[in-house]
Amino acid sequence: MNRMTVILLAALDAVIALGVGVAIPLVPLTAMWGVQSGLTSDWAPFWRAAGDIWLLGHGVDVTVTLDPTLAASFGLDAAAVFTVSIAALGFALLTVLFGVRTGRRAWATPHPVTAVISGVATFAVLSTLVTLSAHVLPVVPSLLQGALLPGAVFALGIGVGLVAAELRHRAGPETAERDATLSWPAASWSPATRALLAAALRSATAAVTLLVAAAAVTLTLLMVFDYARITGLYQSLHPGIVGAAALTLAQLAFVPNAVLWVASWLAGPGFAIGTGSSVDVTQTSLGPLPSVPLFGVLPQGDPGFGLIAVLVPVLCAAVAGVLVRRRLDGMPAPRSASGVVPWGPGRLALVALGSGVVAGVAFGVLTWWSGGAIGPGRLQHAGPDPLLAGAAVAAEVLVGTAIGLAVRWRSEEASESLTLSERRARTSDVAPHASQSATQRAAAQKPVPPTSPAPQTAGVKSAPSAPRTPVVAPSSARPASNGPKASVPGTGSVTEALAWLDELDLGGRRADAAPAAAADDRHREADTEPVPVVRARGRGKGSRRP
Image (cartoon, rainbow, N blue to C red):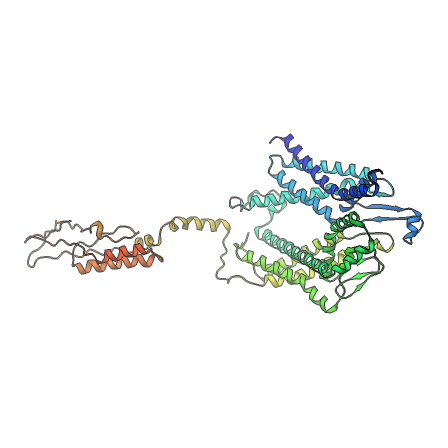
């Protein structure tokens, strides 16, 4: 694949990502335009409205200017100008997902940097064009933010896709140990430090993810239980079929915001909808709110239930700690310049501390992104307090992770402080021996019994130069064994030969834990058949014939 093809494909991905995002609000608004005006009025205002909604979803501030009549109907000043800064995170999440797809494709090309530059530049140019087309009163988006923020969100998704593809590639056995080939700043850190930071990052990511998942489940249950209230708010607006569809899509764009607000509510600090309001686990204090059906799921404060709700982040962090500890117990202990560094209480405490700090910072950033101004007047403040939410989650994740890391999955004697290279070397040494069957190994280790001396005729000495040739049993009388072939004593009584054969057969059976039934029958038949023994003939010299 040449460079020009990579550039065109990355640009096409950017066009598709932006086109799908803008089409989501544009389709219902166009349907509304066709139903209300009969395709006779100007369609441009509906296009600008779709562009404003899409830009708002990526964090672009939109300044709204109301005419005096409309402002008076809302009880505002004659010249009401306010800014809407809350981001409808549904659009941003969609852009990130498209960026992840583009990043994975770029990683697989021979020119990944070129693909990234092409995709981000194309997305930024298109978002700038959308901003310019929507930059008309009474709703005016910020030109600078419209040119930068959507492209930054798309670049974030591309970065996630590149990292995910690289980690998947490096997870293979041939690239598992890559300390010498690392080109990023962590290459100079010791393996013990990198292992500690990786464990803290995994634990924090898992804890925040589980907390957001628990908040999503809680929001779903609230929607189910408060379905009658939500339906009543829909009916009070009288939006019609097309208006109800457009209103539903707009609320779906704010569902990620609502999930983060519920997560902050579970953590304890809660959130606010308007200046002076508070919704937390102990109480719900609200002022006048617009008739938005999504507000019908606002939880009612219950101190008894609030104490239980605060335990949810701790339980999520404990589960994350257990998973991380299980992973650490299944891996070799990291090494530093001074030798093996086991996962003792001190290092596990550092993992819990780092997990709490990372989780608090990450959750604080998410809650900051989910809040903002949603309207004029007191509605200029909505969402959680990022500092309080981040601090609460940091403390809860610290406690929960410490509890989870305290759970051991195997004893101290079962763990070996071996690096991955040492483990592979040990495996390669054992592999050739593992290919042999158990019967072969047992027969190879079993010493061959000494040959019994040949019986001599009374008063006659055997010739010293006569060689001793062992008598080998016929093929029909040999025991069916997978071990190495051993010689049968050629002299002695029949009873001794049968006893030796029986011992050899039992040894093979002890070595092989699960022999086949047919092999057992062959062993039994071989044990019962007599072994022919040729006795010495002649008077002065004893000899044996095979």
